Length: 268
Length: 268
Image 1 (cartoon, rainbow over the protein chains, first blue to last red):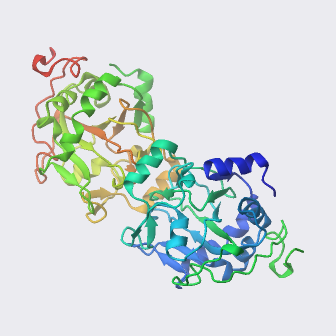
Image 2 (image 1 turned 45 degrees about the horizontal axis):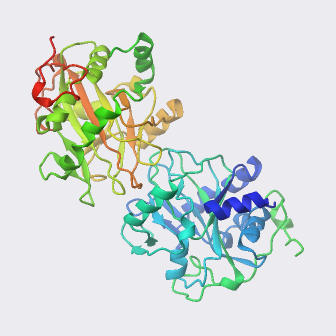
Image 3 (image 1 turned 90 degrees about the vertical axis):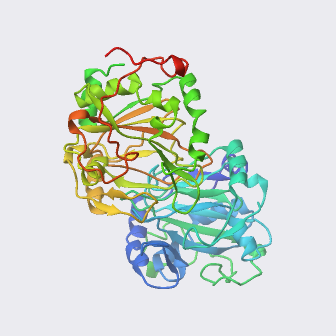
């Protein structure tokens, strides 16, 4: 899995890249089979919505589920990350499943992830990025990710700490700034079938609406960071802001399909 | 303005009809010029969102604004209503502007309007309908109306009175029923420029999401009812459930464009 030069140029220009159908139906079946039991667990890492018991986010899943442990080392996700971040020494700053549950899934306000990584975790530079993988179809109705193209070019924006809108505190961008950025770049919401992958810059401004449909909108997020850009403040629990800075050892392309007990790290 | 037989058949089959660009840009400019001042008024008829001061709905506007008084008698809206409801004696059960304000506009849960008209107002039969006119563009991002096609064919569904989700109490349909209806009919969200019009059955199940964008999503709603189907319970204020059952006297096609002082009812 290698991005072309034109894909890399598009990422740098727009702040994101969309790769529909990167994973096969068979791989998605293996991943999705794990999700209901994961989200049903009662543990700190599984955060619920503000007004309901619906799951909002399951954090650090790669440490407590074997199948997602393999996904977190998958070359289809790690190799593009290596290309775009310019280093083959990457670690997982955060790994989560955002559930956006049917009927109850609430909004994510407009924000840059690097604002949180900087303000909460003291990450030195925005040499970090997000890679969402659609576990189920993301369509126009079930609260798809919305991006403001090119907004990453403004660098880190002023942010306020919103601790009331949802159950999860977030450093958000104010309405005036959003109005200006949208006037310049518009809004896009990449939609696609299970197995589709987005890659987006740590400074790209994004949000997502509520989900009123009967279709949950499960997305796995890898937040990759360069090992030489490791965080320096340990205010948040390690399951939200990982303190294991060892480089990820990438597995082979068939790692989800082979039996877990046969897994070995690929030769580096 | 007359619907064709195939348009009428489509309405009966799907439960709604979409007429993009029914009003001209000039007419929309005249209407939109009134809206900011309307929504800014402090009066019972202007309902605010639950957690903010953002306007949610301005009711009964045809009685306190001259321009919208003319829209409420516009042949482009009244003639299709007459055709679909099978009577030229119609009155305005409800007339409102739903603001779905930029950034703050909140959801409307899944519901049938006739559930409210029946439960709150004792309207005898569902011989009533809604005609939303888009004052501004409705796009995929700013919380467009979502319909479940064909759901009107199930008649009036069981409904629960939701008084907590938003600032406006609503008789809503439960999640199990929505799941079943969506499996059968899917979801559609007609989108289009200012001046586009929807016509939908009183029993069509609909909802709309939150609006996180800088684009307010203003829609005027005419809720037309047959005069021989007038409500029989007067629990809600007349500005929400109108008690003036006199037939609407339709104006002429140019009624928004001519100076208000020249307006006369068209010959019946």
